[in-house]
Length: 113
Length: 114
Image (cartoon, rainbow over the protein chains, first blue to last red):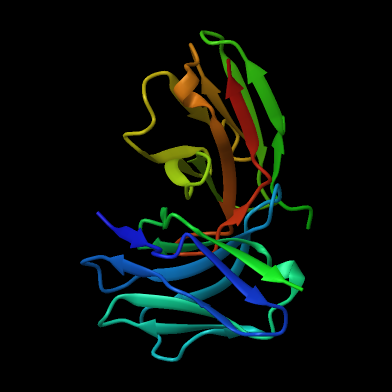
């Protein structure tokens, strides 16, 4: 069974600064996918970024980028130029080819003005 | 594209009652998933459908839980004889096709069992 661990329950950052959220996972699979989802307070889960394990290049979406270290089974999210609207719970998630998502416990990110 | 919708958004019920939730996926999405999320935790997989076929069920889905997707469009999740431990957010997600497509989530149904 796969497991996903987010070791930072809470983080805070000043507006316009950069923050990195950590995620590690455990799997025996070689083909899989990794995701970061964002869940703002009382709002629905939104996809932030996705990484295919077979791709060596780290995924980037505007201010969001990942550092994917396959050998270390690490998948961190970097948010640049943090904005107040980035305040949310962030979940790291793993998907293998059976398509079910396994989520971490989440990191509550607060962006301070 | 209207997104995934769920109804109701909130449900309060007494222990022992039956409840049913509905999920409408994004149009033409073949796969539909149900997850349960308790306060302060990440979502946990319950079950998923490929069109009308239920392909996998988690051991979390006890005999009191049943899910259907009769025509391959909307889905219902029923909980019979609810218990206080069933209190959670029930999330529905859909994805376009086969394989590891991105799942798009609905707003969830928050269940409170008194």
